[in-house]
Length: 115
Image (cartoon, rainbow, N blue to C red):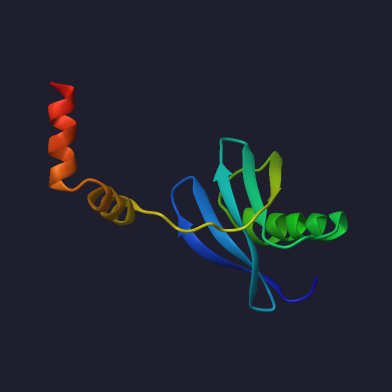
């Protein structure tokens, strides 16, 4: 795989999330979680790749992302999934969905049924 790089999406004191890009095309994402002496990674690939290319991505994650973190790394544990993004959801989206489904009339009906 040539042209593989990572674009950070978030960083906390104990985790990071990156898009996985190949030649500027998104092919997946990786979430890294740093424990006391181990690093846990979840990789979700949006494309079918042979096992040797998956292994190459894991090596790149280890060499370019995990090594740069200021955490002692005795073990790297990686889960790899094949899938596709369904969407991005946050509190604002969930509130809008709740409001759309639960108008005042339906809330009143619900409260009356409860009594």
